[in-house]
Length: 189
Image (cartoon, rainbow, N blue to C red; front, side, top):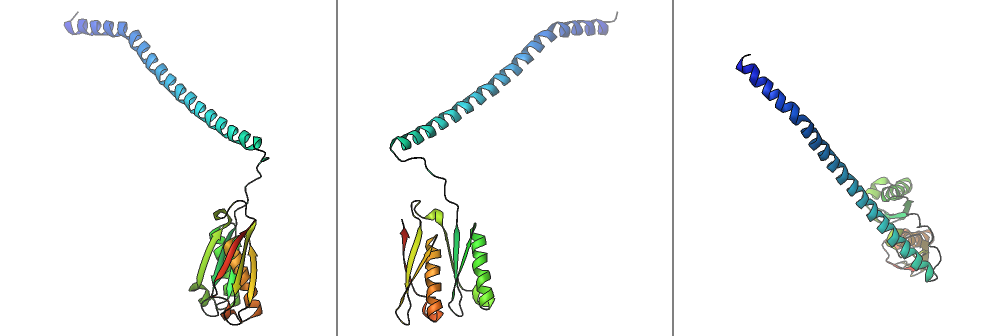
């Protein structure tokens, strides 16, 4: 036998004797990785259970204070008001998103007066999430600048109430006296 063959046999024999040991080490490494993953999962579950316990404690405390079961959160209502730049007429748009409410207000404006006046007009928007949760809505008073008469408007938001007061004003007197009038508003409880 040549020396190369003898060397090959020795290396092969050494590798065969070490293979089971390397295999055990690899299995141990895989097992360690599995254990780490499981420990991480248990830690995440413990955090979630702790969070749920804190929430449950707050609800129990709320109920013990005689507050009853809290109702569902109100639906979000967005309101946008456009005052056209030509006739100072006020238009209100209401929707489930600000973009939808703005579109409604500008569409109503464009259908009533020339749309050119609506794009450069003033637009104001808000939503009922900005208000106090206990409020049922808002009420506004507008005094027209020509006849000094007062007009009242209600709405789900402050902007909606202001727009409704200005719309009531412009139905009674010329819109020029109403569009730029300032409104006094309060939340209704």
